Every structure is written in structure tokens, then in C-alpha cells.
Amino acid sequence: DGGITQSPKYLFRKEGQNVTLSCEQNLNHDAMYWYRQDPGQGLRLIYYSQIVNDFQKGDIAEGYSVSREKKESFPLTVTSAQKNPTAFYLCASSIGGGGRSNEKLFFGSGTQLSVL
Amino acid sequence: GNSVTQMEGPVTLSEEAFLTINCTYTATGYPSLFWYVQYPGEGLQLLLKATKADDKGSNKGFEATYRKETTSFHLEKGSVQVSDSAVYFCALRLTGGGNKLTFGTGTQLKVEL
Image (tube, rainbow over all chains, first blue to last red):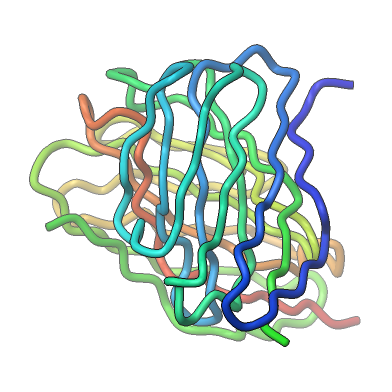
């Protein structure tokens, strides 16, 4: 089955620790995205990548880093600089990343990150 | 800037009741509009979309009409079911803005027997 796989489903971070959230897609999509979901705040864009080896900051990139070395993978690292990391993190992908405004986003099932 | 405003939840309805979830937007250009649905413990799924004024998006009994004059995209369903219980997100994307979506805060719907 084609889709987006996020892992792990639940993740715990200790103080001062970096953690990495995995996102893999087998849809052959060029574009991938990371969103953060907090209660009552909807979704906010952290980083996005329109093509391999390229990525752009979203609205709340501080304290996060990403890489896009392969088309199918877009891991997100939550660094120790992110002081409020507890949230639900959603990865998404789309066929392309530019121009066509009506393209559909496909979402993974999310990772809940909590601070110990 | 661009923004989306949704009615606050939770919205609690009895099965077979009529549903309206209000959504209004502010945008500097001519956006495409979307409704996404999130079932418990899952990611978001596209429910319906409309790309220009007066378009009506529809899917699974849900409908929403792109109203440019009132900058609105209200979600409606004539008869809800318990299985419709979820969080509903209104979103917009500007033409030429890549695929960056601006989401509303989400509205939780609870349908009871």
C-alpha cells in the first residue's frame, strides 16, 4: 500500500536531548512537509521541502532541523534549543511543491512527542 | 497576512442532525480552500476543496461553497452520523504560494446516538 509512515507513534525527550522523528513516503512525491499541532492552535508549518536536497523554513522553524537526502525520507530533529517541544507532529507530502494551489496533501498518522 | 478563522468547538450533535461548521478567511490573493478531517489518533485527510468563487466542494455527504463576497467556506452536512465524530480543519492556499497551507484551529465534532 502507498502512503506516509511516521515513527515512532510516541516519543519522549529528556532535557537537553535531541530527538529525531522519522517520516517515509512511497508515493513518489516531490514535496514533503512537517507540521506541529497544539491543542487550540491548529497546525503550524515547521519546515518543507519541494525537492531532494532542498528545504525551506516554515513559520516556526526555530529549534528544529531537517534533511532531505532521499526523495522518500524527510526526518525532523527536535533539538535541545526547542524549549516547548511537547506537541503532535504531522508529516505530509504532495506530488509537487510549487505553483498548483489545489494539490492535495497526504498526511501521516503523526508522532506525539512529550518531555520527561 | 493570510488567516483562517473557524468556530470554536466542541460541537455536539445528535445523530441525523444538521451540521454547520463556520469558516471565514483573510487572504491577500485568490486562495484555494479546503476542509480536512482528522479522526482520533490519525493524521489529516482531505475531505473536500474548492478552487474558485462559487465552486462547491462535496464528499461523503459534506458540502462547502466558496463565497468570495463573504470570504467564507462553511462546512455543512444534512444528517450526521456517529462515525463523523472527528476534528475538522478549514485551510487555504494561495495560488503561486507553493503548497503551503494555512490552517484554522480546528473544530471538534461529537455525534451522539
